[in-house]
Length: 340
Image (cartoon, one colour):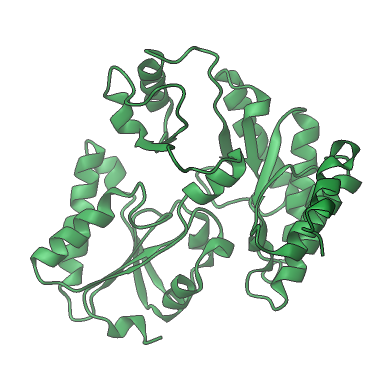
C-alpha cells in the first residue's frame, strides 16, 4: 500500500466499534503510516493504541463550545475541508464506520466533491455487526435503523412494535427520556429491549480486572436504577490483545466472572478476535480464549461462524461448562456434521 501521506485530499478512516482488535488491517496500516490525524472525538478505545509518532488532534472542544450537534458537525466539516486543501491533505478518523450513524462523513464527501478535493474512505466495522450478534438476530428482511435524536422529535415511531428496530446514538438520559415518550405512543411499557454496556467511562478504558469490574458495576447499577432488568443488560469488559499486555485476557475473563457473580442475571459479551490481534496462529488463540471465557460465564460473543474449529470449541465448551442443557446443542451440532 502506498504511504497514506502521498495521497492528496481527505482520507476518512473508520476506527471500528471497540478496541484495536476490531480495526481492519487497512486502517491499522494507514494509522502506522500517518504523521498527523484528526479525530472527531478522543473518546474511543483505539486512541490509546495509535502509534506514538502520530500527532493527534480532536474536535472534542466543539462539543462544549457549540450550542447543538448540527453546529458541531458543521464546524468539523468546515475544518476538514480546509485541511483537505493543503498539499499533504488530512487524515480524519471517526468511531465505527464513516457512513454508519456518522453525520460528518457524508457531508465531507459531498463538500469535497463539489470543490474538486480528492477523497479516500477507509471503512471500519460499525456498531451494527456486534449488536446483531449480541441480540442474536439476522437484520434481514425488516430490521429498521433509526437515529435516537430523529426519533425523539417524532410523536409516533415510524415502525410497528412487530418489527425489530435498532435505535442508535442514545447518548444521554434526556435523549432516552424523549425517545421513551415517542415509543410509548404505540409500545407497551413492558416491550423488551436489550442493551450492550461497554466497561468504559469518560477516561481511558480500564485494563485490570478490578478496574473493569468497578466500571461495569457503575454502569449496571445506573441501568438498573433507570428501570432496566439485569437479563436485558450485556456487559462487554473490553478484551485487549495479549500481544500488548499478557494479562489482558485474564483480566477480561475475571471481570466477566465477577460482574456476573455481583449481578446475578446480567449477561456478558465480548469481541473474541481482539485477544489475538497482531499475533500468529490467531485462530488457535481465539479458540483457547473462547473456552476460558465460557468457563467464566461468557454467554454472548462476536465470532466468525464459518470457522468450523472455533464453532466446535464453542459447542463443546458450552456443553462442558453448563451452558447447554442436556448437551442438546452439542448433539445437534454432531448430527449436523458441524464439529471437527
